[in-house]
Length: 221
Image 1 (cartoon, rainbow, N blue to C red):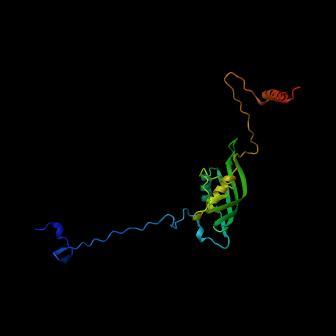
Image 2: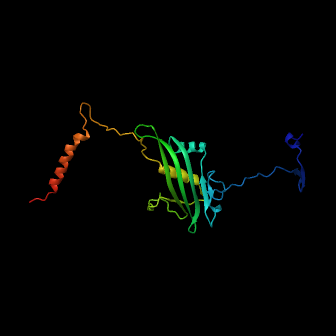
Image 3: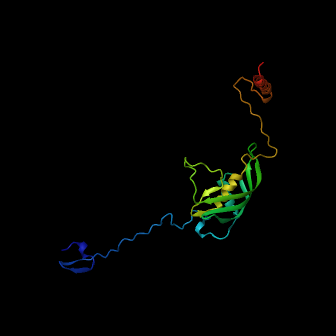
């Protein structure tokens, strides 16, 4: 009796040496991989493909984030609140292969006071310029001198205006927001048992130092 494996309903093929089983298993199917460079998938939902931008005119940009989006941006850039944000402008070809983004950003931000931690509201109005250069020198290369123009970026296959807006807002934030009535107090440090020196105490020594410098510079007879 033949083993059970040969009792499966498989077709037979008449060959030179007799009949043999014909395997009807489908050939394996391989999914075609997409090359990263050729992929048309945007890195972010707001990215614009450079090859699809107008080559003869300006591509308008107008961003007005929703309340939920404002909260997300505020959390990302580490501020208390972002009450309003509008970014308008346009993308246009620059030279043979480069692109230029001209825009204006208006925002109302809330940050903690550096002295009292009370909320400080600031209105921001700034112009934004970014040039996306195809032939861009890598600033991380030690042999390449850093460009003085910090508005230039490397041009890739995509341009994300939301990323430009967020970066411009971050750069425009006040570094040390202070409330109108906040005053910095003088902090004094000294070893235990020693009276700390104040600014008033230090003034006579400053006068003596100035006198010493004047005497040293006085020509000798």
